[in-house]
Length: 83
Image 1 (cartoon, rainbow, N blue to C red):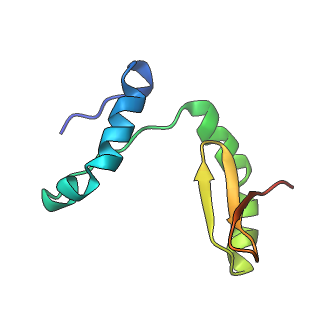
Image 2: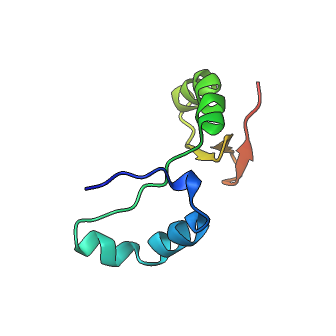
């Protein structure tokens, strides 16, 4: 399998959306598509890793939206986590 840097291609967003739409087909074939994050995004995520650990230790669900860290609040909605 060949690994490519998707950030260099104009169709990156098209590939991402198609992978989401066709996720069941890909799972049936035991395949998947991973979109590589940019170096800047990865660096921002690394700097916020202590916040992820803190939120998860408190029993909250977390997820990433690009470089933003989101945590599920008491109302069930995700909110951005800052220092």
